Image (cartoon, rainbow, N blue to C red):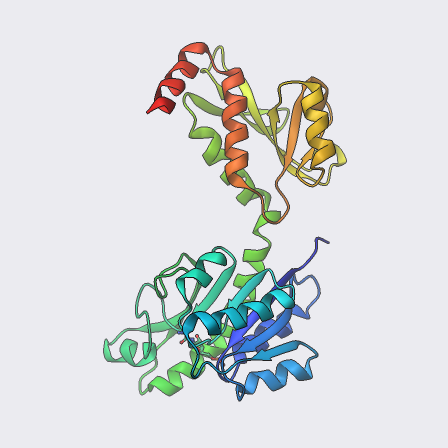
Length: 321
Ligand code: GAR
């Protein structure tokens, strides 16, 4: 199994969502582990539970500190614990833009409403007052704008006659405890999912001029130049010929270049079976931290090598502007 993602959980209060994340991580096959529980409140009840579970804890009271200084203290603890993602779980402080930007794509939050409804506070009272049939919860990526990042998963919870904000909150929490571990697990394993990886390669390949997709030797492959005279410039290979890699194959300039890439960055490149012999290199996609801009650049270069002159000229002219 691939190495597990390392999660720092930030809490301010009871920490029941943190507990749900921790216990889900103890199930077999969990793709993540919780390496730190940190709080802005040394009295947060969840810290005791985390300590009892043998998880590193950190607390730093925010009173009297600037937002930046407090965030820096929290971040130092995260780095010290070796975390690669942060899960906000009832962390009731707004984080500075700099902090949020540094963790972009690696920080999730759970919010007790069906976003985009009811950002901010008092979500349950607002849903009841509006006469909504359902409340719920959302897991989303954290961006500088409050509760506005991409929604990864949601769960709806009916509002029952006589519900108060408290009774609804308690029921939503039960749903949150199911939702958050699943959403976090899916998110940190997305780079192992061939369907998601193919979708990303496809979007980049088909964004290049006059391209189409065709199955070649059982693999999705991308051509340029049309139905009759089209030439392949990329293949998507899902663990072919016993290879452990899900990869995008693109054409290098020469065997020397291919071998140098594989030697210098064996975590990024490999020489694929069959195609390697004619200068195609495999870019490994089932690993954390793929540089998708680099994949896009490779696709464009490989496309240029296969495209007719009339098309590459067009792209050159466009590049000049
Ligand atoms: C949860 O319901 C969570 O959605 C909410 O606080 C509660 C924390 O409970 N978060 C927010 O309101 C964020 N704006 P917990 O400490 O028991 O996990």
